[in-house]
Image 1 (cartoon, one colour):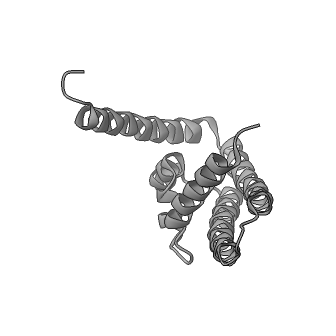
Image 2 (image 1 turned 135 degrees about the horizontal axis):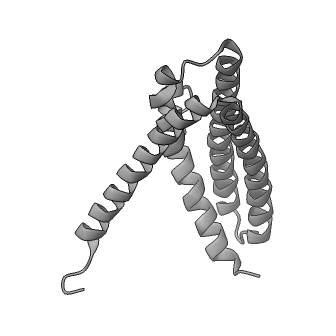
Length: 161
């Protein structure tokens, strides 16, 4: 079993990162822009020429993603409140904090899985030509990510390595 404090610190960092990305009430394209593959699909959407059924699936997947993000942001705020409350005590109960965080993270995982399943169902409903278009946009986005990653590595690599 991993030590408790590093798990708590990692969980808090992840929660803060996600909450920073999860601007409640953000526009759907802003929500999709935080995920490279979903952003690529958003970019491809006009070319895909979705049927009305596919468009409904898109809206449902988008709504599920938004709901998952908003739930994560709410969980983050709730966890911060719990931590502030726990910090007022003479002796903090780290096991209780860990249990509460794990419960919130499990609920978040479930919501993200549901959103992912909706996106996969939408992709599965695409015709071969639509999948080719979507795939090309995704490949382009991944190539841009790789290029950015290489640029970041080059600027953060210590001299002489």
